[in-house]
Length: 326
Image (cartoon, rainbow, N blue to C red; front, side, top):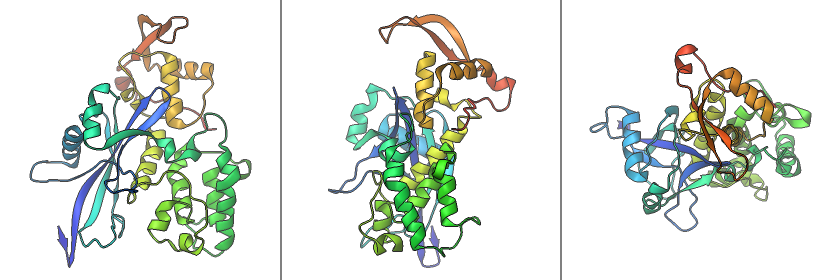
């Protein structure tokens, strides 16, 4: 597509999520050049062969990964100028439609993934400050918040965003000074770190904050282009979605124990849940039913196996696991 003198290409980015035990995973594509960071799976939209974006997405994901993705949801359209920039590149401006896709990992597709230079990575490699399952990450108080406070002090007159000054945004996003940590603000936290020059992407994009203070610490594993921002968008969306839609079961096998279900929910939310409270929550939500079978996979006492009770989709409009805030 051409607009004036600029050529625009429409692509599709996929944040493909699975959970392996206690590890929330995202499918990452290795950089082709030495030292190039990972990226998200990406494919062009071909309107001659695919009637919709989603049909195109499913087609090339299956071709490149052999993954059968279940739940798919459009996230956002990412089109900022320079977002797909490569040094010396004169190619078209790329606008990407981002998607969140959920699947279950299988050993059968590992060969196909390797052939396409793809592999599963914990999403906490990219956002280590988001994992609270063992308590408040030491990285927050030891490095991130001091660096953000310094950024706020350097820019006391920075233009407010949404009516909030930088120090107010930090307080809300990071639960600073004893404030509540909201797991759904993952994108806000990423944006604050990026705009304060505290991510490798800010250096690469030549953000003034990063160039002015080149020795600032950089947090988390970087990604190509703006793919970590796409991933942060998906993380926020999925954490919110689990509270009012039963999408967690797209990540579960057909039968599972309540412990396995709790571990999956904890992996996504990034925080530990009280066992008895979680079980009461699941029972009250009436989203699972016993199969009558048991599992001895853990080597301990046999654990009852459950399955998703699909009738709940007809019984109420917003069935989800309404896990309370921290």
